[in-house]
Amino acid sequence: MTTPPPVVHSLREQIREHIVEGIVSGRWKPGERIVERRIATELQVSQTPVREALRELESLRLIESAPNKGVRVRNLTAADLEESYPVRAGLEQIAAELAAERLAADCSALEPHVAALYEADAHGDGTAQVRHTVAFHRELVRAAHNAVLLHTWEGLGIEVFTALSIRWLGTVQKEYAQEHQDLLAAFRRRDPGIGALVKAHVLGCAPRA
Image 1 (cartoon, helix red, strand yellow):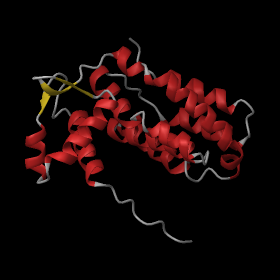
Image 2 (spheres, helix red, strand yellow):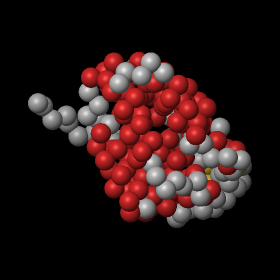
Image 3 (cartoon, one colour):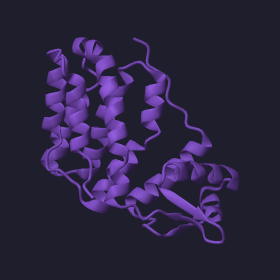
Image 4 (cartoon, one colour):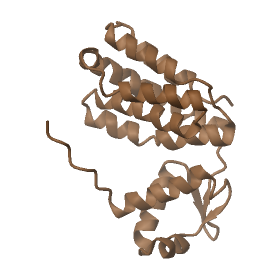
């Protein structure tokens, strides 16, 4: 079996991830200004890719800009974070239905994340819970083999919004593994209602305003 080549991220994507990590970790708090020039100096890059990364994050509604005020981290509310979940739920319902036969035959892409979630739940590791929950759902969407669907799902900034829901709103569960184990079992038994099950699962994770 050929090992896939490593993913090479563009400079813009690397800067974007740096800023996202800063927001999620609390380096930049809601309402705090993000200085383009300072990031460029810190990362030893020009301001152009930093500007491009910030523009992309503004489209995700993580930051906002205003004339003479610069760029700031948005003060996201539960209602703001909740808005993406119905869209995500619809996309994942379609993905589950498209991927149903494929995942019924082979769930190996999902299994490691369920195992990791049991470990994360046992240790109360919120960071790992977010990482493997999102990874599980990303593999589910990938299994649909629909590039448009995957691109649209990725564009919702799932990992960032999941992490921010936990960090800013305290929407943390004690157990994530069992729900994902149940979805795994539903795929394996070829549950005809798998799309609705996935949709209900995603909607159940939404923060409440």
